[in-house]
Length: 173
Image (cartoon, rainbow, N blue to C red; front, side, top):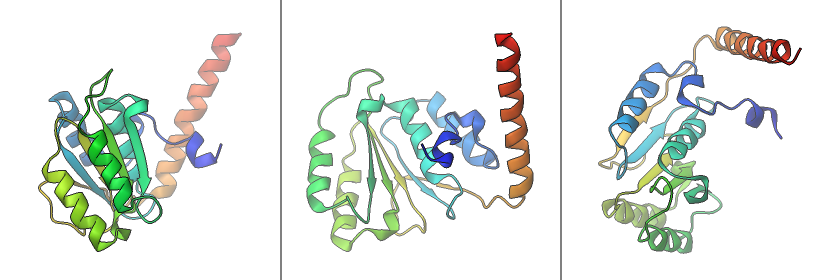
């Protein structure tokens, strides 16, 4: 397991430095976020994919979360499969999520097809993780901010982890 995967936040409470985005998403999830499309943008390393995965986990069971890298995997045939998958209701939490990373790398034909699909979203959520916003859609746009004091955030995060590990080790004794 890669280090970034091991320490990637698993809940909205664990996300540091993106308070405005977390507050907006928390409010939407509490009010029922089904049928919405989230366009998440921000610089590299700002937490776009992490945030998309957390939202997806709150809306859909793991079995119904599909993640694509636009440059490699999101061909017209993959979009055909997404369209078919959108027609069937999911069990469990009831939602289906499609995370599209690096969407700025989509080809024009894929963008047109994706825009058509987004017009017909049923009660499911489609999550798109973008760098620059290339498509003007009627989706909720969430822009993640640059974390200016990365060193302070890292120290804070490591302190929390150390305290959590210490309390676990103390409880074992």
